Length: 237
Image (tube, rainbow, N blue to C red; front, side, top):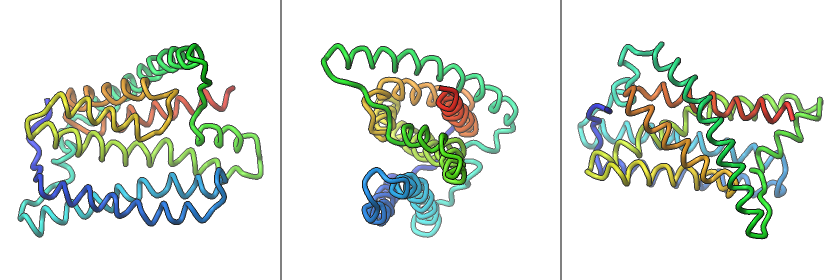
């Protein structure tokens, strides 16, 4: 079970406001490019981790300077639990397991959408990566997308969803809302009907892993393995 985290409800408002403000310039920049273009997609996937990074830095500073409640990065996210090897192994196994579960759920979702008379569409980023992988001249762009998906996104998203939002809501007395609410938000965040159910389950699995290890390194690893496995399967199609 997660150990006590020094969350301050007021400072979390700073986190949320800063996050929204940091997203705004990125949305403006992305709007300058043609819809569906590679440049617009690069802008879209870059702005999120930058916004998360900025908001977390502000959050740490507010806790330290305004509320006189210094927050240690290692203690807050459990990086000092001395269970690194165990977290990496559990993250690897969990990530692979979540890949199998998500494939089944995505297939069932696709069949349900088709039965309702609609057609499921993959995420735009997935389609774009598939297109870029077929163009040798766009290898640098492809490498950028892969690094963002396998390294940057897992770190940024785990810090926000499992590292901050989940334990913060849980600490104020709503553990079920914390789990279901952040999992729902995580699934909605990816804006794709086809993967909604599977990403809900993935998020709940990552929460369970974080609870079990009390170290954010474990869900970060599982998230990275999950994304990497999906990319590998995409390239092999």
